Amino acid sequence: MLASSYPLLDIFLTTLYIFLFIVWLMILFQVITDLFRSHDLSGGMKAVWFIFILLLPFLGVLVYLIARGGKMHEHQAQAVQAQQKAMDDYIRTTAGSASAADELAKLADLHAKGSLSDAEYEAAKKKIIHA
Image 1 (cartoon, rainbow, N blue to C red):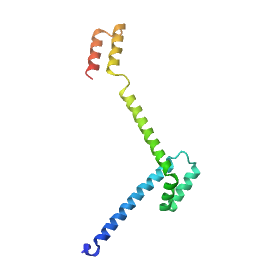
Image 2 (image 1 turned 120 degrees about the vertical axis):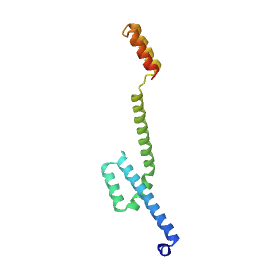
Image 3 (image 1 turned 135 degrees about the vertical axis):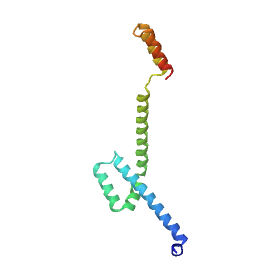
């Protein structure tokens, strides 16, 4: 009964409209994120852009994309670089900078100086080799 009152073309158009609305929402959130991430805009200009986007959402997003689309790409690239740098720093600090060979060299040096006994040296060496 529902199929007879709602033809196939109407189903297609409704699906298309929903898809376009979801795409527009994604663009809207990306624009708002970029607006607040921008360091090259003053607080007043951010407020003006935000009010413009709130009052005239479709036109505001379109004008923002035309006026600041290139800056959006730059801000996204900077955010990705900062995130990658933070991840690299975290990995470096977590993994440690010393390799197994460096650790073994330090152990041999400590053993040669007499800071480690033979048993301690062998136990630490096995621990590094089998880690």
